[in-house]
Amino acid sequence: MSPLEVGAFLIIGEGFGKTAGELVSPFLAFAVPWAIFAPLVWWLRILEEQGTSPKQLARGWVLSVAVFFIAVIVAVIYSGIEFRLIDPKDALGRFVAGVLLSLPSYFITYRMMLRVISTRMATATGRRLYQDSH
Image (cartoon, rainbow, N blue to C red; front, side, top):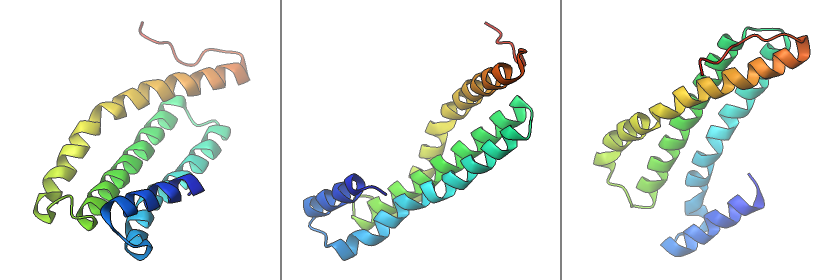
């Protein structure tokens, strides 16, 4: 995480009257999604270099984004509970609501990544691999 992110957490902590020690677990909760997402991106890039089909790669990106979003949702809920902004009894409902609200992003990610990957592969091979329905 960057110094800006650390600074943001310290400002949030100051606003809520929290010490740096009390901010460690919420800070780490927000670091976990990136620690999960970075290796997935690396793995997808390797698969792309190996010539995996654009549809399979797009599905991989959707799953990676889904895991990332779910980890972020968990981090937000956990931090909310730690800062006493969210009642622990409401955590499951908020998690389900967060996942349901993020569903459209998965469909958007699939179509977007399919175009990007197909364009990149077409440029590399000189032929078109995917035709958009529009």
